[in-house]
Length: 173
Image (cartoon, rainbow, N blue to C red; front, top):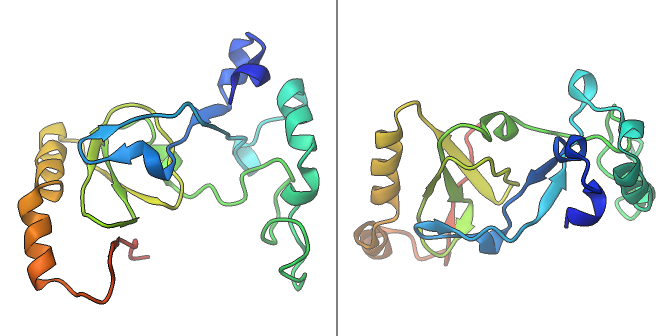
């Protein structure tokens, strides 16, 4: 929760970003649960953590788990994946954060039903979600209606594979 970290300093809000959890996204709606990620960036886009004392103090409590491991370290050793990043930085920001301020569809990656939710809010997402952007808002809303339709889910239930009990949407990289 962010209230104890920001201490009424608007500057602190700049690195606290709203993030969606699995239970926040349902067919046709987002019920944001007031969870935030400390988004410090990486490399040239990184912040100076010393300029955010309460956030640095909070993260420092978890420094052992936030430190990048060395290549070859065992899985049981505390820390995050090996890499050239500071202990407080995001280790792999991906590209979804660049789309956080654009109109988009949010699609759960693993769910019992297929659906999408349209939003213009600046939510960040983790690997549980995929994001679809388009400059034309009306096209996004049409895709939302199609993907969220019970008819499409019914048809998938008839002709789709019965091997899995949920949809697995994985980006093709």
